[in-house]
Length: 304
Image 1 (spheres, rainbow, N blue to C red):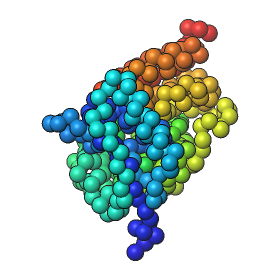
Image 2 (image 1 turned 180 degrees about the vertical axis):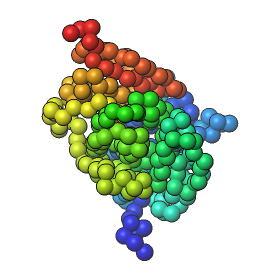
Image 3 (image 1 turned 90 degrees about the horizontal axis):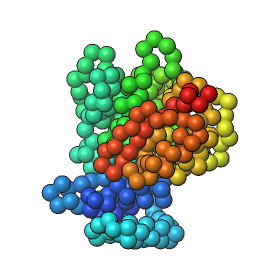
């Protein structure tokens, strides 16, 4: 048995309602800095939101943060249902099999299709395919914020010219891998979570991009405004981080570049939008889906 198969995996799962699942998603994502998975029963309006961690337990502090977060969601008037927290060990093979029931191909556009490694699909002429394997830091493209980013990447995909791309908070690597397959070059990607970076590297290898793509462990809050400029930047992050680090993200934009911001709840989006517009940017596209809102920003040339 391999070392990987012997590694402990735990599921940190909150049983809630479809009304509260987005807020619970953000809560777990902010505590554990990895993307949760969501299972919803449309017939009962019940949902399960879970993160999978390669360790044996969570800390008392993490457990208290979850408790406080669930209470805050409930006190805001949102029905959290049971709001029950369950922590349980998971066999790696059982976890992987569960994903096969929930992860299906996604046709992002006529240019891009995302699929799991276990499914064969018929592609359209000129359509590139991104193949993903299960990983604990998993982004499949199903979540509205990830899907928005993928659509924008396909929309801005270079035809003849070369466009550079930065994936700030790469998670499973789905955006950087998609960008590379769509013709962006160079592609730079990093994430705060070493586990996410490992999964992203594995997914790059799955797509034969290990020589072309590199994923690094970096903390956005500890980086300095940089000299390197990118034509397209994607930051699918929590809203307060997008606001606090707006100067850095803008410093990495090329003069005619665009910044794709996602991972934002609808009631938080005006705060993000206003912060970037005050800094001299303008919003050129916006999309809402469920509780989520995402936007595309460029430098406002009318201010020059």
